[in-house]
Image 1: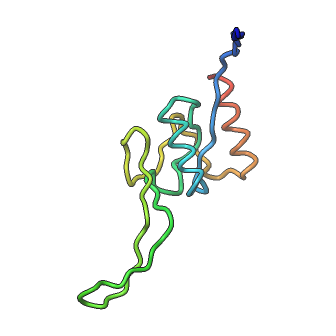
Image 2: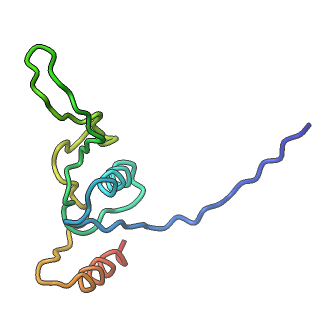
Amino acid sequence: MSVSTKTITIKQRSQACLTGPLTYSSSVLFANTVQDYGFATLVGTPAGGRSSQSGGIQFLTLKHTGIRTIAPRFILHRPSGKQQMTPVQPDLAVSQQGLSNTEFVTKALSVTNSL
């Protein structure tokens, strides 16, 4: 049995990912991955959440004291290991101050056209 292989050529072009104060939770994980692996340029303002995220919670009762506590089940770190516990910083900063959401996106798009 012979195996046929194909070569696929992908046109390389610049990609951008918008971040801002509402970038939180799974979007922070996405922004971390995009930035750390160089899939795209992060454009905008710092993320609203920390670059390290916790997932799920567990309820615990400490054996000897009976104190009840809540703790994360796991912590997700950036692939690069850098900037832990700080907001994700964009590669290209675009200020949103004084702009509507539409104006902010338009401004970010104009910046990305130069990539």
